[in-house]
Structures are given as structure tokens and as C-alpha cells.
Image (tube, rainbow, N blue to C red; front, side):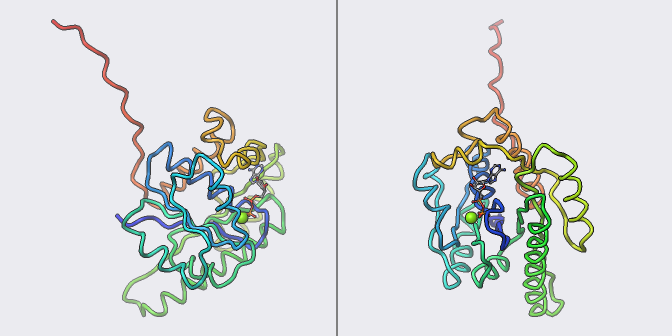
Length: 240
Ligand SMILES: Nc1ncnc2c1ncn2[C@@H]1O[C@H](COP(=O)(O)OP(=O)(O)O)[C@@H](O)[C@H]1O
Ligand SMILES: [Mg+2]
């Protein structure tokens, strides 16, 4: 089966795109043992530097990818991976539009705040315009869908704010929030200094819990085959 291509995008800087990319890669690669490819399209190379620092170097990464190389970087690797994660820049440009065109799903992180949700709506519209462009070329012979989901992130303890944000998202046509949200947890920032993620550093902690739920929801959405935890060895039976 061809790799599922998931891009993280929004023109709001600091919304949590790279964090989402790192954490999904770490979970799918180390817990579910899926073949993951990371693609860094952000010229500031945050993902690439994090990757070079730490224990997740084993995950292949293509860095310095721009509009001249993105489509081939994805297309040439579809058969060799289960998931291709594309981390987009904070200012959406041509490379992001090509990434949308190759994606099964665009995850749009947003803090529970109006400017983030407005930015998420802009990104969603760009994804849908890309989808329209591709369908126009297909002239009804087939239909091409690029799903989007808004990921509420850095959510503080106040559930009222999260509820307001959820309502604001649902009020806009086509915007769908992911069921799982990511809490504002210092473990997410801390582990980046080690080139790691909470899934490795604190697998029983709250951040790893959020990511596990989120990765399972996203995996289900894009149709990754179900993950079967390695079966526990059968208990030894006494010889009769
Ligand atoms: N759920 C979270 N809880 C706490 N800090 C977070 C969370 N998600 C992201 N961060 C921190 O917020 C900052 C911006 O996140 P980042 O993923 O780099 O955003 P973007 O890629 O959209 O610019 C980083 O310092 C990151 O560690
Ligand atoms: Mg980033």
C-alpha cells in the first residue's frame, strides 16, 4: 500500500506544526514500528536540527526541500514507507501548495485563540482550492480528496476556552476539529532539546498519552492498517 502523506500546515508561526510532526513520527516509528519518512519544507530547518540532535536519527529525513523538489521527494518514496510526514513553514508558499496536492490529510494545528483559528480557516481554504484545481483537471473521471483536520493544541486546563474554540471551529463551513487535543505540557518543549519526544522520554506521562490518542485517531482517519501490539508470549505449559 502506498504511504499515507500527512502535512502539518498553518501560516501561524508557533502554532505547533513541527511539534506535531516530531511526535507523530516518534510514536508511529518507535511504538507501532511503521516505516516513517520525514520531510522538512521549512527553510528555518527546525525539524532537521532537532532530528540531527537525537535518538530519532534513525528515522529518514529529507531536509531543505522546496517547491522544486517536494513532489518528487514524496512521489519517489510512496512505496518505501507507510507514512510520509511533511512539516511546512510558517509562511505558506508554493512548496506548501505542492505538499497539499500530494497529501491525504493536512493537519492544521491551532491554539485555542481566535487568530489561530482564523489562520486555520485560511489554510483549510487553500487546501480546498488545491483540491478543486486537481479535480478540475480530472474532469469528473475520478475525484480527489484532501482532508483537513484542525488540531487544538497547547490547550490550557480551562475547558471553557477549549469549548469556545471548538464551537468557533465548527461554526465555519468545512472546518472539522480532531477529537483529540494536545494539552499545554512542558514535556513537549523539554524533549526537543534532546532531539527526542515524550513518547521516548516519558512513555507513561501525559504528553505521551495525548500523542498516542492523537496518532491512533489520525491513523484511523487516513486508513493506516490497525496496529497490533506484539502479542505477549504464551505462558509455558507444564509438560503432561
Ligand atoms: N502541546 C504543547 N505544549 C507545550 N508546548 C508546546 C506544545 N506544542 C508546541 N509547543 C512549543 O511551542 C513552540 C512552537 O511550536 P512549534 O511546533 O515549533 O510550532 P510551529 O512549527 O508551528 O512554528 C515550541 O517551543 C514547542 O516546544
Ligand atoms: Mg515549525
